[in-house]
Amino acid sequence: MDNLPIKRINNNLDDIFKIYENISSIFDSINVLPEPITKKLMEGVRDRRPPRFVLIGDSGAGKSTLINAIVGHYAVDESDVYRGTKSAEYIPIKDETGNIIWEFLDTRGVSEQSECSEKSAEDQLIDEINSMSPDAVIYVRKADDRTEIDSKLEFLKKTTEEMKKNRKVPPSIFVVSSQCDKLAPSSQVDPKAYTKNERKMANIREREIQLKELFEKHQLKFKAILSVSSSMEWDLPYEELKQLPIEEHMQHCITDYRYNIDQLMDVIMDSLEDENAKIGLAVARNVKSVLNGLAKKFTHSFAAVSATVALTPIPVSDIVILCTLQAVLVMIIAALSGRKLSMQSAAEVVTSLGGVGAVGFGLRTAAQQASKFLNLVFPGAGSGVSAAIATAGTEMIGEAARRYYIEGIKIKELSNQ
Image (cartoon, rainbow, N blue to C red; front, side, top):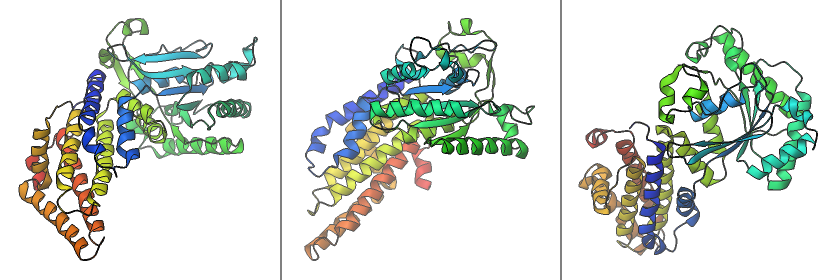
């Protein structure tokens, strides 16, 4: 399955929440349903919002270039010969329909903060950051920058401490060693080549270690340090590119030497505590791996619910509920790929994926109910086995549905595996 337009992904997620609402009465009837698992995930789908990031670093560190590399098109003008951002600039990135899908606060270079005259640099920046309430702070430092850094890290420390006072929790800091392609040997700028060059990779790792030691020296806690390259060259100037539809920008990218950008987004996404922002980031990234990740989250969530249902010590009563849960899971994963299924169609898919055939599904069901009958002799003896089987069965169906709908693997191939 190719990447989908963001508008379509949003429509798919809206469909998923409608599916959940339509069958919520079934969920509500299970008074042991662990709400923090499924309900929180569904609320994240319904209330998803754009991720919000603050970029801090010196002018020339490549903050604007990093934004373009992250969003995957020429969204922000990049200055080559003059100082870039003069003051903190709020940058909303919109999709093809005009909806905001990313929010960035690109701050002035740290070295220029002292130029503020009306207000202290710290106070002005704090006000701007707090008004945004960012999900993460990205500190950007050129990999080959050898200028003084101690005062800049002290400034960052004061800034983040003030943010903590406002938010009651410390901000998540991600350290980016930018323009790592310029480290020696600087002639190698294509990551396909320099990732195989021992000298270049040793220099990249050494710079990461130096940054780690500097942050620890200043007692600045961070989530991760990554070396990245945001290098992208275009055959049109910014003024012309911004007139084109977003989906056409990459047609004018003549060289794409980005490195570790996806990995940076992966570690940020994994650390986000706000489920709404996490789902929003998944939508904004619009890559198959993210859809796969969402499908796996839904699968794990429904598997946990299935285990709870299976612990009910009444033979047969849970089969309809388990089958319904698994059918809903298939409907959700299908919706992620842009396909709509009725409950009946999803139930048929569950049957075909369950073993891949009715016999396999029947054997699992029989084993599940047999374990429950142990309760008639030894109360509680069969529950653990039953829950394990229900969990494994739901995980299996979710994984098969993911591979079928998102990866495009045919059911016949799945059955052979």
